[in-house]
Image (cartoon, rainbow, N blue to C red; front, side, top):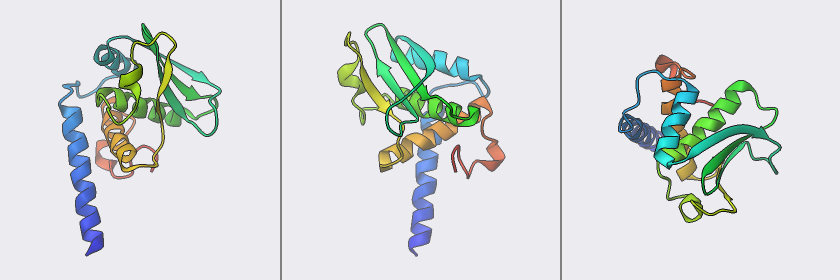
Length: 152
């Protein structure tokens, strides 16, 4: 019975992620740079995507500055992992994620790490499901094979 309940909960979470992305009104297909442009409009500032030597085991992070944001991915990631990490950070932006501390730091001149990619919490799993939906729009995932997700 637990397995059926877990499956039903997973399907509800996936449907919720799909609904959230549909509400963004994104075209059926777009490129990653076009998706970044949409995120910039949502955030209200330019997002510079770059690679960097990140501390610890971080694969990506978003740093807010007064007039722009830095979305950094770990140097050495494969193209697919880099894109998946960017999508995860963009999912936080599109969700206007109050589960992260970016709201408190938006507009501060000094900047602050806002989002870090981690799947340690149920909230981060939800963000990853939204990232999976975004991946469908840029063609990273095949809609007929959506069950595995970006990293799974």
